[in-house]
Image (cartoon, rainbow, N blue to C red; front, side):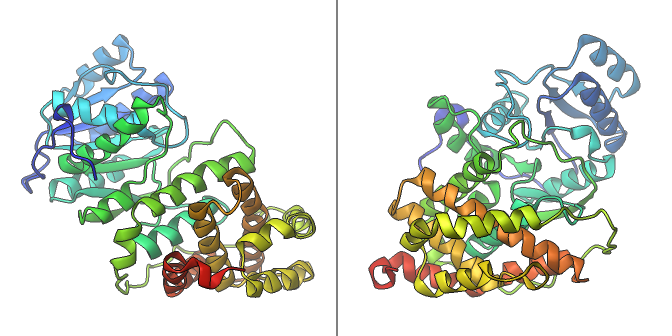
Length: 406
């Protein structure tokens, strides 16, 4: 990793002595959301002074909050804040966070993403307490419904867990706690993107922390409103997320090929109650996959080995009531796409577009399993375990791709 520029020079790791000089940065949100978030911060840190930087905060809010919560020291808007992506934390957010933390001489920081008012005071305090105890990266574990965060469940969580050994259930969380050295590391990487005018580039804090051997702590955060991207085109969104994740895998290939994933204690699943309108109709997903099998078979054959192609052929012929994508098939399919991304087997845009119907097949299978009574969270854990089990497959293909040419 490149050295930290002088203006981003890292501060020492946190001292485990209370909250200390804590900075909370609230990214761009509607003014009423910011004021509600400030109320939550006032309650979370009652009797303890913290610094708060918030985009879109009005002078009226500053005066009002100052009267109600004198422990909050409002720094005004985030210096140099760029327009937010609106649904995830981006490179600009991490760079601005660190610059503000340095200016305020903080020794720990929280970054709250879009819709921050939905994060409870208890959750905020839990993140801050973990930072105060010396954690480098604190990631919330949100309570999500069975139809929420499916890209996370299918792709982000199992890949991050298997390849980087990062355990947090939401590796692309929209709220984070950080030590100053973690914030400095992320700012250094973010600066490379912002220098190329890529302010909205995605960042992968869990992978970065794992590669740096920094401590990662996950804390329960309860329910939260998940911000929605402006674009509703699945092809565009999945390509944007997957390309960034695959690039991160490529960047740290030397790390994850050496690392060994330690067995983890089973994560307790949230109570599961199936309701009639819990899940969407899977028929359009199945039809999209079946059509793609006919139209994209030539592209898939450049990426996937014969065994996987045969399994997909059988899958395309299954009736809806028995449609199931095996966990190992999905894991190896994703790994083969990661390898094809690295080798540029085909145009990356076409490659990522060809992944979408396969993802829809996984989603349809996941939903049908849940409808049959399988706990969806239990299934997600089984998928992650399949990715861990088949990591050796990716390592082999990565090191000797010619031996495994389809």
